[in-house]
Length: 527
Image (cartoon, rainbow, N blue to C red; front, side, top):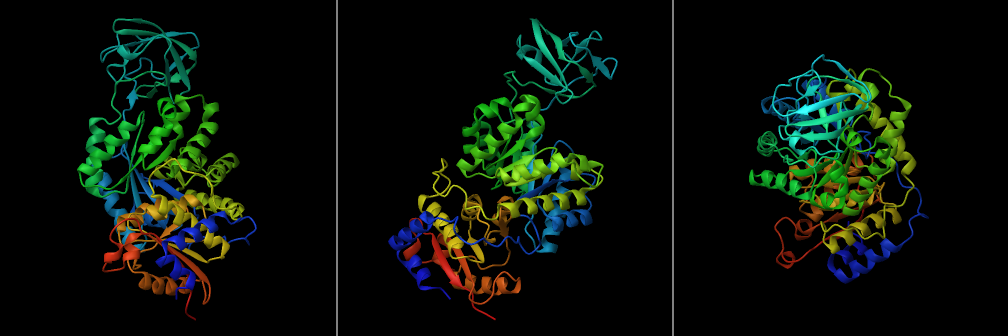
């Protein structure tokens, strides 16, 4: 049943505001340690994103990965056409139904990828100080000439620009420009091959962030009903808005993830994070575009910026890279994953480890183990930035205050569960950013909202709950919490919800205008 406190919070907005403000001001460091158990499947609060590829595309393996801890499956559009990726979408959706478990899908657009043409003498060793030429056209005229898949490259190169080849292991500087030719000198020697990728860290390019192929893939992703679409090589916020327009014009509510992998993106980081629904720290290309020694500091800056904007952030690339071929990761990789979590990453991503590695299942299990161990060390931390003023405007001030108050109440009252009832998912997202270690369950009448919660740190999406009706939700959560061993009779559960929960199943004339957010502190009934 609802306590007197719950009744007053529901019916008296002034009392609710005062109570919530007091809860937020209450010191939490003196509270008793909160439960450290994860959800009923032994999953970490940090979400795991796994890339689908030949090593894991069979239904049985995808199911095993989902059970082992994968929350979001990534479909890399640089590999596989839409027909093949549609098969992956259908398989993942079927597995989600079989497991009765929301599973999200992220489509990763390839973006503009620049590649070398045919290299004479492939593989070619480029000695320090040697000179080569980029030439316009498709066919090099001499062994020391290169062509590029991006035709305007020679025109857009300037003296002093750097061209990075072979994943950044070979570096050349432009020393002279003549019509149709750019003379380059090797400053970091190494071996290159035909059709390898080219990185241009300080070149101002006219190439659009969304190529024609990306546009087609985005339209397909929208019609396929995926949950997230990530944009590669973002340089400015307008590109994020352009992708969202494509998705929405095709009837999709998929969230847009901006991949930070260019110097220009770092220069406009605040604006890009503000425009996006989430961010991916794409350390592969970013580590080529900037000095690799800057990577740790920039990763932390990106995470901190996402916190201020209340946006989820995915840490990606080579997290457990050695597990391509080994059953155990390197110690440095374990530390890398742990530090990403300690710094506040919402999710960690596996790329080739699951797509083409020999041990995709073992890799997912290892990442989950590392996350669980790291989170245990964080369990006594107070909620994050209780007094900070976020820069984002995603949440109404009332909703933000209610969410913070609910998190503070849960700790102060030693609640066993926090339940976020949210049609749009914003309430669950805000609770996630609060970083409470009280187990948090997300409920919604919207299946896509439940899938979006798969990227929200610490939120376990639960199907089947009557998220629109306060009394029905309380009864449902009582029975569920007792059955799953989260609570017993007399334990406290904090329920926080928005207008749809306040209005009830049929709606309420009194609740049709304005913003209505409620917090209920409930004592579990039952055996």
